[in-house]
Image (cartoon, rainbow, N blue to C red; front, side):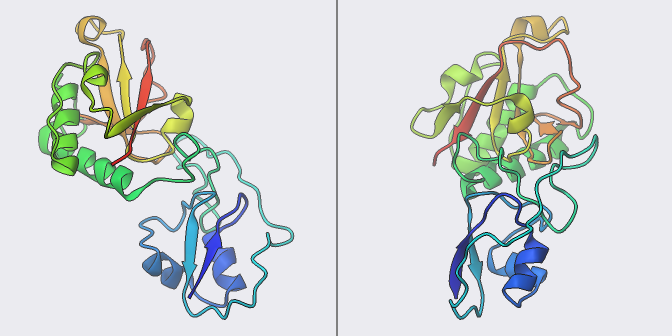
Length: 221
């Protein structure tokens, strides 16, 4: 078995053809839940490969096309690389980030589903506790100060970039609602390019206007 460093423009289907294997085999070997989303810089294990390939970028490789509304970025063509999804140039989502994203979705479905309950910090805190065994206190605009710095690192990126990466913690100082102007808002990214989760699943976080004071934190556990 050999390792290949994923490059911008790669797709899982093209790599499968190049290394004479299948998309399902690559996804299974690398535990890729969504074969339509792979990350530049990540290491891909290639089963049964002889090692004779130069592992140089393939000629004529595709380039990432912007994802349309309602579509995860890089969701067509067998998994185009999302080069901005590195969460602070990490080269892709870590297992800890994926674990937090899954815990966040479970918390949201167990609370409000697709309807806000006004308990965003409770949902995020519950997800963090379930994922990492750490209890984080505070409301939406306080939770950022209470995240343990040995487990979370603030990163500098846009909201659009953050939403393409699973398992990032988002906090806003204020939102446009009455309670939000006092308590702010917090959520966890799902990685689909548009939604985030807290006490409910917000399907279009980019379209939620009137929010200010965004901070983004990445798990480093």
